[in-house]
Amino acid sequence: MCTIRGTVSVPDANQPYSAVLLQGGEGIDTCRIEHGAFTLKTLQNPQVQRRIKLIDAEGKDVGSGELQDYMEIVADTKRMTVDFGTKASEGSPLTVAMNDFITAMDKVLMESGPEVDAFAVMDSLMRANYRAHSNDAVGLQAMRLLSGFLDYEEMVTLLAEGGDFIREDERIVMDLTYKLATSKEDGRAVYVQTGPGGCIASQTEWESASELWSSLTGQGQYVLVDFWASWCAPCREEIPNVIDLNHKFADKGLKIIGVTLKDKPEASLRVMEKLGIDYDQIFDLEGVICAKFPVNGIPHFFLLDPQGNVILTGHHNLAQVEARLKELIN
Image (cartoon, rainbow, N blue to C red; front, side, top):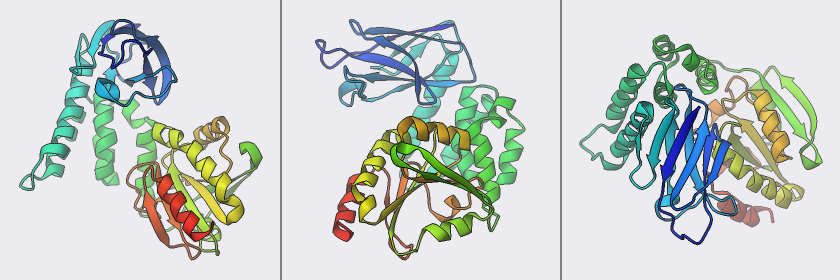
């Protein structure tokens, strides 16, 4: 067991705040902040990256002052300390290495001038951290970031240098699957039709994802496509807003389709049931549909006109989508 003791300066000492420890977006421990201190506990595992965030009395992320950030930790020791003010930690070498890596990447993005090849610098950082930590969580984080810039053959070669847990990581496995799909003309997909309240009405496997896509878009109605994944916390947070949009515009001719990105069907179904998703889904098993769009982070929305052309795209921009729909079909 790893005990994590933390310190933080709260913006209002008279208001209750809590620290939450998350793994994969799910809370695994929580503690009230008392006199600027908190204690969290979790199992020791040097191969798992976890995150500490801070919430208010209503369970909402605190978005002001020193509490606006989060901290990444790796429970590789029995006892460790963290300080949200300085983002410093003691007692956990891998937590120090993780945050040094994240800080270095952020610095390249924020401070590199036009004379610096930022990508080349980041590429070097990612490769160096992967090779230095090929059997722990820092290496996994580096490979998750680096994989987006690798072709299939180079990724397989680099993965051979790392631990089995990296090769077996769900996101890494799905990324490899999607890289293979980019060279394919077509592939399989599952179409999940939903009913009221988010019940699953039917699941149909299509041998041709392209044919499925053609049957749903460009058919005379506006379509909003939501690329998401069960492992993506921002996606799950945005889904209630997508559901609300569906309730507002489904009767006016809008069709919303969720397309899972680098996800396993069973994981997608669990989130659908938990959140009551009541708009249809495509489990893009081989990445064929995702390859048709410039998806650069999720959730990513694409609004298509009745002919299937993209007329609006963006992240976390459902207010803009709603305003456009009001102009078009309200």
